[in-house]
Amino acid sequence: MGFESINNIPPEEATATELDTTPDNVEDNSAEIPLMITNKMRERLSDEGLSPEEISRLRPEEVREILNKNIEEEDGVTKQKTEQEVLKQHKEELFAEEKRILMQEKLDEFFKELSQISHWDLNSLLESGKTADNKKFNSESMGQQLDPNMIKSLTKAFKEGIKSLPKIIEILPDILKEFNNNLTEEAEVSVEKKLQEEQEKELEEQKKVEQGDELDEEKKDLDSKKPTEQTQTNNSTEVTSGQQIEDE
Image 1 (cartoon, rainbow, N blue to C red):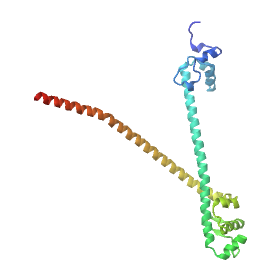
Image 2: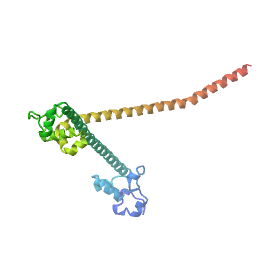
Image 3: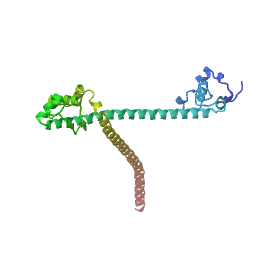
Image 4: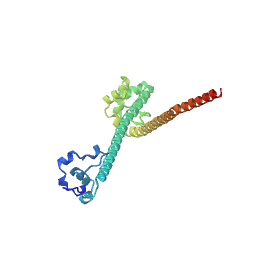
């Protein structure tokens, strides 16, 4: 059979034998132009929305360009999606940690308030969750009137010297839910600030690296010029010495 255009070869003639010597995986052979359009390539081009007529008019180099471009776009989307997922997870972890930090700070201030009230009020809170005059305890640190049962539990923890959040959560598993609205609002502001600081720090580090690379390039340029300057100096010295000998 004489030579004929690869565009006229029917798909069914792309046999396994022919594919053995033809790179049908463009992503592994991005620098090579396929010798023919294989069935696998036709399927991928069809998946990209090209009709059989459009595919038949394509040259092998055009096929490679289309498939490579799509691979690069897919890789870019995958990378961006991965970065977004990592950032989301990092933000969620920061958010949860920040809520715990804020809750611990509130507890510390609350226990400080308890240490400043009278002995009678403290015992009354321990027994009923209310002050000695049967009023709800107003806590500035918590920013709200607490449920008497929660007051009783927290006061008991204070009397027993239990002040860390993990231990308090064992006693009051729902304490974070109780203050969720206040904690969420404060934590969001704090997390956004931390993320901004991290971004600024990262940009600053990147800037230092770039400046370091520029200094390295300048140093290389200077070092490359030194041999030339030294050679010119030696040649000048040799010429001067030769002239002196001639003059003598």
